[in-house]
Length: 494
Image (cartoon, rainbow, N blue to C red; front, top):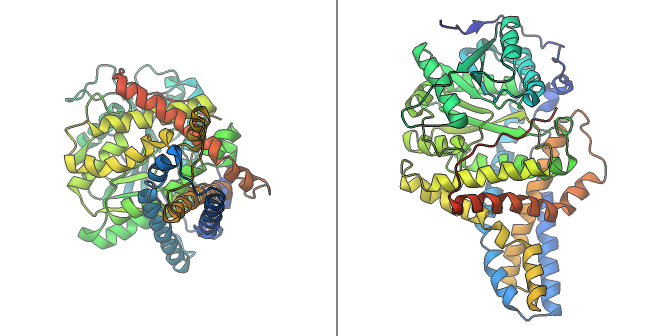
């Protein structure tokens, strides 16, 4: 039977209830871009690194074998650095413009919104999923007249009965159960298979229209009123723009302190929020998500999703990135970046952190071999993936250790032009963690950091780099060995 989009009455006065999530009470006009990116950390990090490199070169101008190697591998990331800084400046410009045009009046969106939340349905995911659904049901109806939340689960999952009770108790929630025997024409598996089933169901129900928007979210990623307001404002702008409007948009994934069990992984994930205000605005925000997309806070017109679909084949484990590649070919220039945040949790421990990065690397390398994706898109993605996958072979700790083993740990650059490029790269690396940490702190219940935490985050970047490298090496090894494709779902912390 068809499950209609539910029409809700929307009032112009923000509700006081925050659905058990303490952050939801903080999302009024105060939330408008107080965390917009600055440049102080980049300038400081770059200047410090250049001066340090110049001093070390004066002490020993000789360039050893490690120095010749690092002169190449520590210079190459300038490609990403330029892109990232351009993205940060673009974000800052959008943030300033958004702040200047902010009005206190509430936007009520007249177009329909369907939130799609795939979940593995394990017991350890239920508490996080409950938090997420509560945030949707509390916040979204204030800004949308027509809204529904589709929770997509496999038949026979562990928490099926609990989810059915959620559907019974809340008219906004629909449980979409994927039959065990469901197969796609191309044999797609894992998360993409579940999303494809929900997508086909919507098509049968006549919801694959241009005035229906699909918001893809993970089962541990919630929203607040600020998120809902920005999504509604964006959709209304596209409705007014008509044929000139955008078809896809991506926002920021933040990590509030209270949602993350491990402080180590929480500090390390500051870089992810930093990427969301640098690399993604300059690509997705400029109309071409050529470096991929997140699987959460991904907003797509239902009519566009109907054309692209999610049936990408049995090897797909980074379905969001493959969708981005196909979108670039089908709708060039029609994506956008918007100033909304969603709120997720960092991996519960180091093992899960490594597993998460392993899947990303493994999936992206596999994507480069997919002939169903245009060669042009794969070639444009190749430099970014190559620099990321090559990070373990450029890690300073690894190279210095090798230098000591061979009796020459000198990393002096060939000349100070190279040294200056190193400094700019290092400054951007510091900026990435600093700005990401600022976002994560701002959206935490305890939204003031302890005085030593920013220092710890910056000082800990070598440790975080090693953590990232462990996942990269593991994913690279699985890809090279041709291991059986797996989709690892990490624990969802409470």
